[in-house]
Length: 432
Image (cartoon, rainbow, N blue to C red; front, side, top):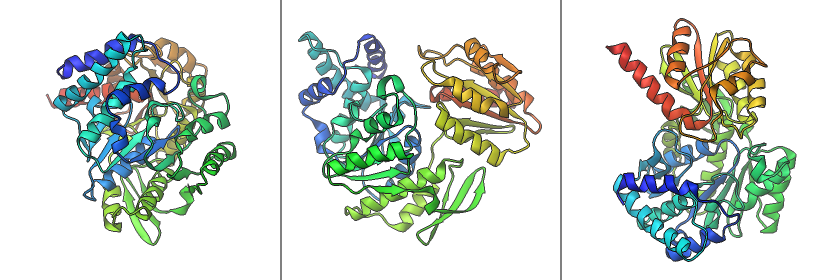
């Protein structure tokens, strides 16, 4: 298959059902020669903050000379960004080649009467195959949804298991209580690995500690209060930790928590024998890029994009908006998935807005229609309008915010690519 054929193959594979557990994934990887066993991992699970932590780690490790793979999902701006080595996305040719091998195995399993692997299982297998083929020294591996039965959790050579902030999300799959969800996320903890965890609510922390006790592991618990913020602007934050000063370009209420988790993870890697210098850490943090997390995508007027798609992330967004834009008129563009707790997100965020436009992410069956989301938002705000497209929402809201206002686009990360394209189109039109 070429690149377009391989993408189409994955789209068609969405029609296959899924099977609980990891047996199908293990069977597929066994037939591929278990390439995942040739690699070492930093395995990251959590509800919020995974992408930011991985972005910090990826940027720092890119300074060190190690060959570092990164697998994240979903893609935000480009599909191939899910599979990166030293911050360079997989080529179209390499993706097609690796997926073709995975597809041959998946199809042979179906012919033998076994369940056909899901698109996520095949993408994960493609990542393992690609990183092994490229002889990566270390792989930054993000779980898809949970932990214990996530397709990524077939790995057995974890260096560090990282648990970011855990909150209520994906309850239909992970559990109805915070403890149940945390126990699922903590399923990535394995014998012989080290554990770094963000400070959690007591119910979640108890489950993480129990998982660690099972393997006689003492977790490193990271707190945002370990760093002292000395400068906090919209485009950067400077803080002191361990006698050194660091500057990060990612801002918002959650970033001190995320960067401290990354720093503790790097400290554990150094203890494990990896050669990472303070200067490399400083430069890597300063060069970190992670679009879609309280990111300015437009400067005139200011347009902020944020993937606040659950109540915990929405709470952090509210803190950030109050921190940076007190007294400013805020114009919201919101798009959400039907299976998210969008009612809670709207209840928390809507009162801050001057006006709200709702959008529907195109091409995703989970997307909530703009009119339906608007109806829900009207419970908490009187000026809500559904947009026919993301382009319309960007055009109208940037026009309203032209003088002193700020546009804030948030919700599902899946519409961030369309948002960025709409902004670029607006820029092009303005230059004509």
